[in-house]
Length: 159
Picture 1 (cartoon, rainbow, N blue to C red):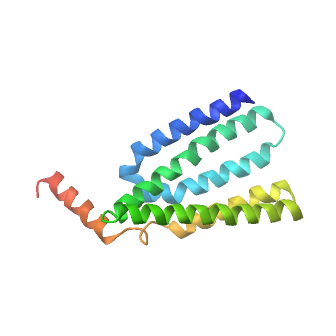
Picture 2 (picture 1 turned 135 degrees about the vertical axis):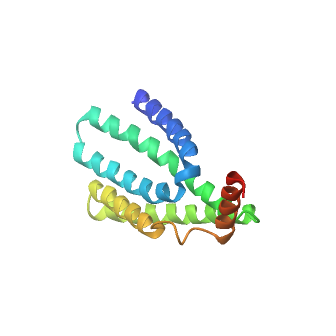
């Protein structure tokens, strides 16, 4: 068990590193796809249930993907609210806390009244809804971020 948790932590490190290298070019795509990927890994955990090596691989994948998501949201926040980052940070912390509370309540209800598998399925549904909310990222893009991206592109092109 200790080795599995160690590997989960190492995977988290690589997930964070990987997200930080890809975030500049693929922020909105990753914001949409990583929750779906995490949901697929969660369903994979349900599929392999009692095969310890398959569960270990799924947990490692889960650790990598799960640790990449906060990097993406933090980057989106700094791009979108570049003039008030403290306020934006407080808002996102509040949103995360609310999400954890509601997720725990839903998971508890599913566990108490249905099964452990229902909690995994409920989490996967919530991850799919998160991806739908992000969509292609058009609603998430701020005008300030779009202008700064345009200026950076023009500077790089020498315009």
